[in-house]
Image 1 (cartoon, rainbow, N blue to C red):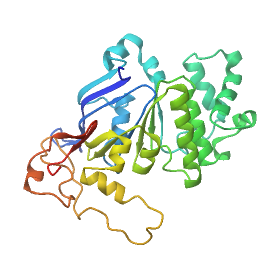
Image 2 (image 1 turned 120 degrees about the vertical axis):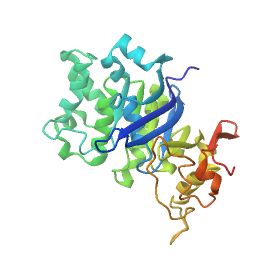
Image 3 (image 1 turned 60 degrees about the vertical axis):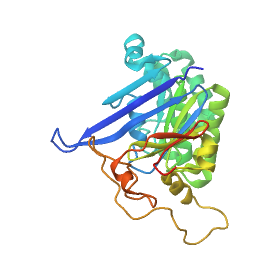
Image 4 (image 1 turned 90 degrees about the horizontal axis):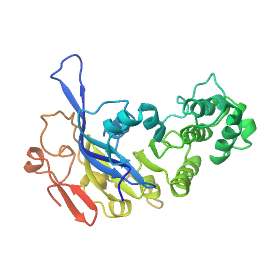
Length: 319
């Protein structure tokens, strides 16, 4: 089955300050595929390049290098043939902050009817019923009352459901969910994950789920890719990556997940060290400064990807 999205050797550089020679490499040699009706979790701490990759796919940023294919076609060719609006319709994004992603001066009806009309999904006559249908779909009922409310009258979880409904309004095939539950109360996070899981399973929508929480990646996504300082350091089936991690950074993320019955101070599998500012000329493994297993080869040479199990890959000299 051909993937709906295919990314190969993706690179994204940003200029630091006003010097053209002072470059930060936010994404370095990243490759992955997203299949139809599948969820891929991109896991890592802040600054790992997760959101940058999503913004490249929404064409907010123009990649520095690499190849992106959508529905088997180079992305630039697809956009030239079908137009930016059609690509934007098919690839939607849910942002991290449900408080700032909605305009406070407009009611919920306005937020949902606008994409419906811009993308010509309904006529003005049928728009109101479609808005109510979308609100019911994401669990916001009574829909008639919810549509007339303003964002400040909703809870954080309800706002995020509105954001999901707005993305669904244009019948997307891919949703890029950028930390969609990190700013929500713990009590409502599971509801949002279950809603996205239903959309994936019942409507066949593909999700790229960006998160720093590897535990929710295991719960929601079929595949997981772990990123550190712009590099994919481990990737594969979620069960394999989370149950039997091979890269020291993946082990660090899992060691930081709270567990019932393990209260008190816990030892994290990491040594003190600076997170590097990666540049095009940087060498070695990006995790070497914090890795308890690091040796001289780690600081000099980038490790190749190794298949540690069928469909499970990692980059480490000490596998």
